[in-house]
Image (cartoon, rainbow, N blue to C red; front, side, top):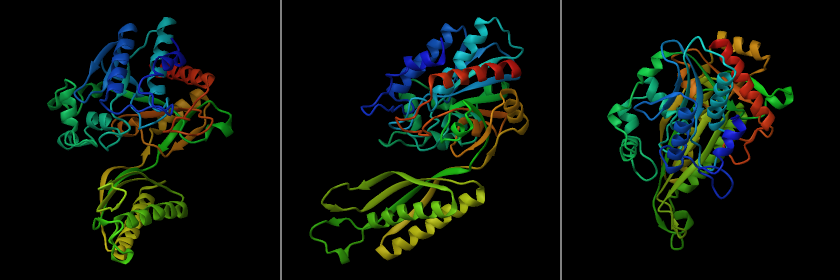
Length: 393
């Protein structure tokens, strides 16, 4: 079965009214997707393991120096159909094609479904791969809370998993290479006329929590001059984020906000917002965030409010393995492009030679229902993976 057919099997899982997808870590949709992945592994004769972090890995063969493929099946709220799933289904389709051709690998081949890559539920991206590699403290990760106040440990327990088993994954020591295929995020490949590209690097990026505090009060009875409104400080910070990012050529987004008490006729007492910031260098990211914090603090003083900023996750620049990416770019005769998005490949790159392939996205839209790729380009991505596996495997 090809990647397009496999994607069609997932089309109704976690679908929202807008046509997008909400598949948050350990929710009913992702649990259904996990069952689907296990079924695909069984049908293909692959041996499935699940580590203590919830990552699923389907193995063709066993032993050291394995080649790992895959991606993730979770999404952001109301995300697109391809961010994550395309890499998983393409890997499964590539192995199915190779097995049908009677090809025999010289090393074990595995396909991973990493859990909670998006970080949409517990606030830390690539949580499954971070736990597996030891890039995040296990106790800290298990204590992360979702919007309802449930910790990751609580949620894993409710899903029949033992949180005490979480942490660095022994299976990862068997991996020699990791190659992740992903839908393109942005619109680099279309001008090149290329269906597939190879990633060069991932920009440094992170997430910061901003707590703006003021004085809750009555919207009608409180004169404008007597207000200490944190919403004003928040609004000034949003505008400053756009200004600073535009001036420096970087990226700054505040896409999530909570307001207390959240009443139409009340001045807020607290506004909590989350900043996503990305830059082409570590100093650029540091300067961007520092500049934004300075602007937020100035606005808070003017408004009689306060602001506290806390980093929730920060990932440095990732340069994918030079030899591996050059090998794959030459093999596929593909253009090389950087990415501003984070991926499990960016986490694993600190531990082993890692590469990424991108499949052309004609609109460049990602993390939204309009995310897309042509069926022929999806097939081209599978063909590229087949060639990669033949070369590395």
